[in-house]
Length: 131
Image (cartoon, rainbow, N blue to C red):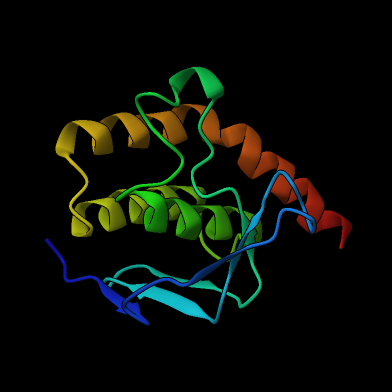
């Protein structure tokens, strides 16, 4: 397993539901992840819902927890699209592993983004083309 490096080591959040009620969490400061193969960055002020989980799976996969840092990096990677979708999903799995997410949860969440993430990726891709 490759060594994951986070800068800073702890992700800082603010809560601002008035700015965007669907994405009320605001990242404070820039954050990066690198494991020697994949590099991801999150800009200061990035808005997120933490983990985008359908309401009916919330009891099994809450939107916060040990997987939230992976989910935020994954959301930022999908929005920026500075890497491939496969790399973004691989980083999601790698960050969850480094943060101690149980293997069963990692596998299910990774399968979820591989199967259902294409729509989110395409929606951001369309948005990138319009800019």
